[in-house]
Length: 173
Image (cartoon, rainbow, N blue to C red):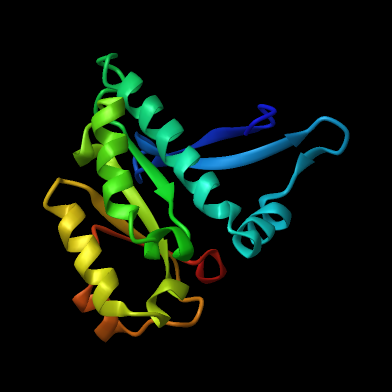
């Protein structure tokens, strides 16, 4: 981030008729010597070192800035932005405040923001997770469970989560 090597790619989300509904904000690293570095290589290191908190906040701020910009154009004003949230980031005590402050600072519409959680997050303190999700939903923020079917959750867990979208793991498609 400091050397401007990280950027976001926006992967379109389309419906069955081919209409673009929104985009997934995907962090990418272009190293000056190594070129494109796979997220599979740098995200686990960011998790282990704690850098994921700073990286996750940067992704949230950058994605919300883009989302606010989309609202200025009638052609993109209704598009949603999906942002992946790591377990460590979501569990951080200031997470809810950071999301709300980012929305206030960028002017992004909370109803167009979708935070993507993963199934692996369900193994720790489900009650805290539900509480944070419910609080953020009162501001209009949406939630998606990514990579469903990779192993942790049961349908009984899903019933308890205030989800707006369920993304089936690609291994089932």
